[in-house]
View 1: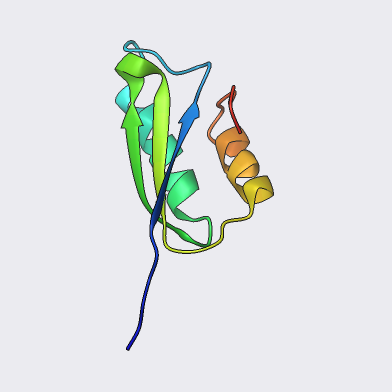
View 2: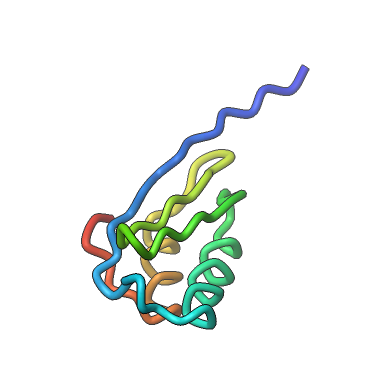
Amino acid sequence: MITVAYSLVTYEVSSLSPATCEHCLAAIRSELIQVPGIVGVDVTPERSRVSVLTGGPVDQGLVQEAFAAAGCGVVDL
């Protein structure tokens, strides 16, 4: 039997707003989904939030690097 525990973590992103273009939203999703352990990404520009679904431990340093690569400033990490 295999048991997988999922966790949902939400980050406040300072550079995210309702005016953020689709290209930038796609960049955020693309960078984060490449981080080992992240299995899903939901971007909510109206609330300046990015939620990630993890399927195990995730290196927060890699998450921070992914946000930086997407050009985002994270308030909560």
